[in-house]
Length: 130
Length: 130
DNA sequence: CACCTGTTATACTATGTATATAACAGGTGG
DNA sequence: CCACCTGTTATATACATAGTATAACAGGTG
Image (cartoon, rainbow over all chains, first blue to last red; front, side, top):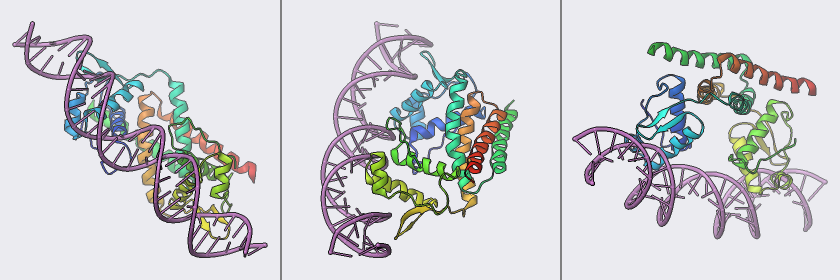
């Protein structure tokens, strides 16, 4: 999967890397069991340091998106446990996001449409690859 | 409005402050024209430095949530211009958020219900205060 | 004139980010 | 056994950001 980093962004590189991999999983561009490039290889491809990639992998492992096989390396393995905890985190982040949306004059319907559109988008990528 | 800061959070204090004020506006606990405590007073109340509050106010001013009257100080003034830009920012953030939700096994309907519930919550606080 | 506002400047400490170099344990294949 | 690949750990350095501290300034109020 192609990873693109915005080096002028104010978001940390390792964070952008995490986000893009999670995005890849959501859109099925990365499927369960798929092996990720090694920390050194990924670092070379992107043009960053090995430790920055390792930090991203470590976080993804802690958050239950990745596991490590000593033979092959890091691979996608989504842990769907802790649904309640995930929902609680979603709720908190969503509350901040929707507060800003509401202040900006964005209506409930506009946000509902946005959610639907993004889910459509993710489902669409799924079907293309089946 | 009561401000509560989690000093053990990994989120910056000024960021938490911004979020809570935006949340206050969305729930109408802060209404248009309402004067905010001065940077020194707010700093004393929370128990942080004046400059940390000033940073939050400056950001809120730049993002169009606050204006400054040289006579009274900072007050709420929501700028609803740049709806398109706001929607674009929402879309990008929502895409990351929903990707994580989807990976966690949270369905489209669950997220739609969450959005509805939070909007209900905000509207509810509104009506209580009218 | 005293007192309030936001704002600015400077300095310092602490933390987080990203880099660089190096080494280690576990596993694979020649 | 040995070269080579994995992730992992350790150490050091450079830099940016966050937060604090002290101080001063311009504008407005009473």
